[in-house]
Structures are given as structure tokens and as C-alpha cells.
Length: 154
Image (cartoon, rainbow, N blue to C red):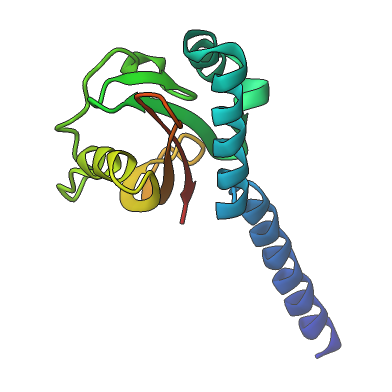
């Protein structure tokens, strides 16, 4: 009986450790906010074009865990993307998630309106390669025609 209890305890502990390790691979809303604020500060410091190049190419700085920076102009043109450079230069105004939600239109409305907010949708997680629920902070860059976005997989 003792051996069975010990095996069961060790198994439960191993599962808990694995779950804890996976949770550490996921960014938090606070980390997303810090990254978005840092991206806006970087745009102001080095200018939009250089910053966009950095966000798309400098993975060591601008991709942490499952968090990455992407930038749209307020006409929905992708200016930078931390994990998918093929999207850069494309107009995404009609992009929908797997449930038909036009989340880019919502991003533009929030950025153009109140300036910042969280938007929920489903998107492919570059780490798990699966579609997962995501909430993304979108913030307009003050005085510019751009919105920075950093999302958290839920």
C-alpha cells in the first residue's frame, strides 16, 4: 500500500511540475502591457521604420515566452510582426479568426477611439502550433497613425 501511495504521489507531483513549467512559457497580461509600453517607447526613440524592423527581426528583445509585438497603422496595414514577417505590408482589415470575428476592425476601432483596450479572439499560438483563445492589448502610439499590439494566450 505504501508503494502505491508513493507512486501516486510522485505521479501527481510530476504532473504539477509539468503544468507549472508550461505556465511559465505563457506571458501574463502585465508582461504584455510592459512589452507594449516598451515598444511604444522604442518607436518614439528610434523612429517608426527602425522600430518596425527591430520588432520583426530582433527576436531576442521583442519575443518573450509566447509574447511578441506587432504593429498596424490605423488603416489596418501590418507594419511589423514578431513571429510572421509574411504579414508585413498586407492590409488585414477583413481578417477574421476561426469563429468569424473581425478582430482587426475591433483593434482599429479601439486604437482610433479610446486609444487602448483588450480584445479577445482565437489565433494560432506559435509555440503550441494550435489555435487558442487570445486576449491582446492594443495601444495607439501617441501622436502617430500606429497601434502596437501584444497578446496573451488564455
